[in-house]
Length: 469
Image 1: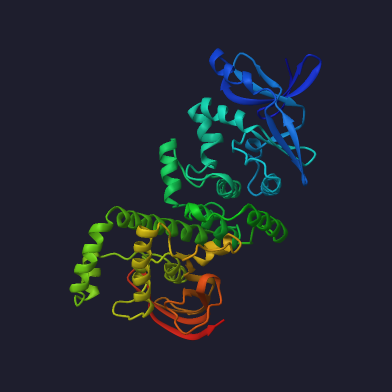
Image 2: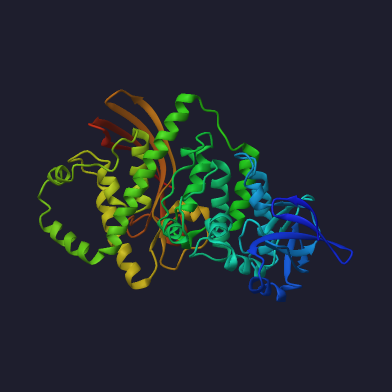
């Protein structure tokens, strides 16, 4: 019988003079579903405390008129689901504890746990309990659609498994605890999976502008990156230690807070447009190759005419520093469209052609070798500098800092410092100083912008420093 309720989804149950922990499954108590739990006695879960992993064996199940409870050795604590109800930021120490426990499981070569927020329990003594994976699978299979969308689906990427899946889970949990919102708003599984696949997610600053920009950037870059480039759990362990030591939030006055929210909303719209463009490219690649050939033949037509016909800029409405950020981010994504969109009509930027060529090269290599030849340096760093594929090299920008020099209503000047990566094939004569024949330069650019209608555009880039490292 149930002696008393301990916490959300946790009860103390007495049976045969023994006290058990009961974990509410959310699965209705009927003959068929109850039969699924009959053979799960002695299934092995784990309690991780410090560097130790201790078995937690399931002792059967208990059912009342409405619910089925999993039974096991008695411990006191709270579920991950309950912890997620804490105030913004208050859950971060718990997420750090969860991350450390996942690292210990991995180091002891135990099976990665399945993520369901009712089946992970933070024990009062500092440990973390993971229910047996076999039980979690049955819960996932037989829970209601509403419970599935609340406790499991938002935290599990359908295309990931193992350590990359857990990395995605931690990013999602961080986003939720910092904003009180999930990264993607969906009412059903199909819509949710489609949004996850898109990688289009709004900045944390849309809901919590006080969160430090570097924390926002790290979490968003993981949620939005390609599935094969997730950082390892050790990366998360180091990040939590740093974040908790340095603090999660920054002070903002009301004006800066509203500006941060507004900017985050504009950036989300930009990401949605970029995704729609990439989707169009992927679905119509054959046609686009033919169009590119045709465009090459008529390249004498001024771009201003084409721009006039389209009558829009992707950077419309963004402040000058965000235009600069998108401009340099175009190198990392091989997105020549956003680079060109940031430039004034007629301005000749020599590296635009470089991005064009590398984009075509990457698509051809992907078609024949099923591997992207160029790796975003930010993604590479997030993996802890993991070895690249045999024929991969770094291309793009990292260590980006943007400093305002002067700004008026219609003009602005910025100093930009960054590290530029590229393969030796485009930087011939320079010795490699990175992985797989990658070459790095420290650069400093003076950027001049002017405002045209509702858009800040770059009309001059002066390279002040280009130092081979």
